[in-house]
Length: 100
Image (cartoon, rainbow, N blue to C red; front, side, top):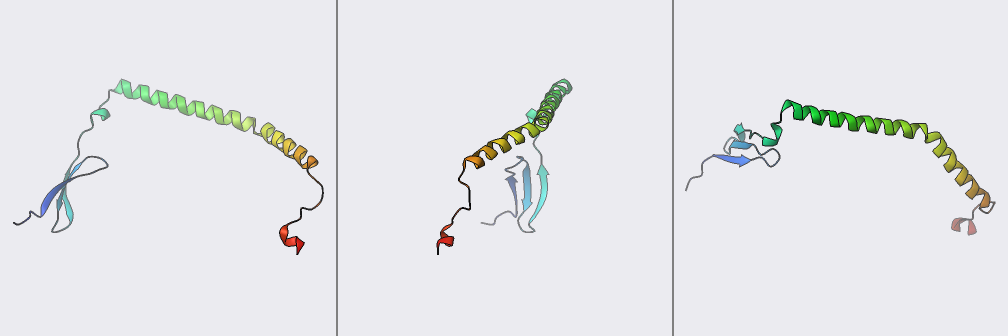
């Protein structure tokens, strides 16, 4: 039983059908399957683009708000840590290596 050196394989990523020559180890041809979900009307695609644009604008505005309040947040964190440092015992902390 002799095997045909040309066989077909389906690509796991895109679903294309590849025709491979086993003897020469090359792809002889490929057939790209049309994705039904890729076929959208112009109006539907424009709605998707507008929604993506709106989401990007919201993320941008949120980053602006975060950047504006960054100074106050850092100042509050500093004050909290400063208060903790005041309450902590004064002096150097003894490590186990210092006890030898």
